[in-house]
Amino acid sequence: MKVQRAETFGHFHPRQAAMAQAQAQAQAPGSCRAGFCFRGWHALTRAMNLVRIPGSRIVEVGRLAFATPGVEILAFGESDQPSPLAARDALVAAIDAGQTTYPDVRGIPALRAALAAYLGAQHARPVAVSRIQVTASGMAAIGIALAATVRAGQRVVLHSPAWPNCGNAARLRGAVVEDLPLDPLPDGRFRMDLDRLAGLLPGAAAFILNSPNNPTGWTASLDELAAILDLCRRHGVWLISDEVYSTLVYDGGKAAPSLLDLAGPEDRVIVCNSFSKTWAMTGWRLGWMVLPEAAAETIADIVEVTHSGVAPFAQAGGLAALADTGFAAGFRAHCARGRDLAGAALAGLNFVRYAPPDAAFYAFIGIDGLTDSLGLAKRLVVNHGVAVAPGVAFGPAGEGHLRLCFAQAPERMERAMDRLRAGLRAELGAG
Image (cartoon, rainbow, N blue to C red; front, side, top):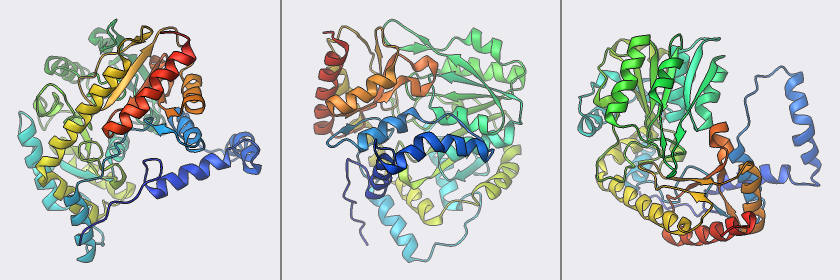
C-alpha cells in the first residue's frame, strides 16, 4: 500500500497548521479568549502551583505568522520535504500486519541492530547493540538522559546560543543551568572557549553538548571533542551529546566528528540522536541513545516509566529509512542548495555578519546594533511576510541574531529570502 503525501497548509501538515491557527486565533486582539490567554493564564498557573519554564519565542513568532495571511515560514527547525517513501510504506505495512501492541521497551531488535551497524559505519569505533536504546524522539532521549544523571539542585552546564528545550528539560529536573556562551568571531562564526568550560565543570553533574549546533552551525573538531571528553572524565561529569545534525555536513564528509569516534562503552557519555533531521521525520517522534554498557538496563527502566517504548510501526518506518541510503544523501544536497541560496541573498548587506554554517540546516544571522530580535522578527512577519526565529529564543548569547531554516525547496527559499532581504533593509534603514 502506498502512502499519499499529505497536502499542506502554509507548508505544515493540516493538523499542525490547524492547531497553530487555533492558538493564534485564541490570542488574536479582540478575541474573547485573548484576554484569558494573556492576562489570566499566568495567574491561574501561579494559583495552581504548577512548575513553569520560559515560554518559546519561536512559538510566539510562529503563532503570529499563522495568524497573518501569506507568510513564508522559515522559523521552525524542519524541512518542507516529505519523509522517505520507504519509511511511509513500511509504517503502513506494519499497521496492516498488526504491529500495534507494546514493543520491547529497549526498541525492536531489528532497529537496534540496524542502528548499531549504521553508527559503526559512520564513526571510528563500533557500537554494540546492547548500548542502543530507542526513544520517542531525540528530545525524549535528552530528557531521559537528564532524568538518569541529574538530581534537583545539581548544576548542568550548557553552551549557548542553544536550542531552548535542552536547558528547560534540565530545569524541569530542578537543576541549576549554567551558561557557557560560545565566542562570536568577526566573520560570523563561533568557537568554544575550552578554558572557560574547564572552569565551569568542577562540581557539575552534566555538560550538554550540541555539535553540530542549533542555531549557529558551530561544529566541534575531533581535537576539541577529545579535549571536552578529557575534561568531563577528569571531573566525573556526565557528557550528554546531542548529535541530531551529525550527517548534515557540507565538507564532503559522511558525518561530523562525534563522541562515538572517541568514547568507550565505559565512559560517562550518552549520545542522543533522532530520525527527525537526517530523514525529514520530525513528526514521527523517533530517536535513540547510545549508552554506557553498564547504564543500559537502568535507562531502559526510566524509558519504561517515561513513555513505555516506541510505537512499533514507527520503528518499522525508521528501519526502512536506515535502509534507504539514497534519501540521506539527497536530503543533504537539498539542504546544501538552500544554504547557497541563503548565502547569496545575505551577501552585500553591510549590517549583516554571516558565515555559511559548517553543518546543520540553519543560517544564524548577526545584525549590527540589534538589541530586540523578537521585535524585529515580529515586524518581518507583519510588514514583510516572512517568519524567522529571533536570536533571543536561544538565550542571551543569541540576541542580536535571527535564525532561519534553509532546508526548503529552492523556489520557496528564493521567495522567502527576497522578502527577508527587503525587510531587513526597510526595518533597519541600512543598505
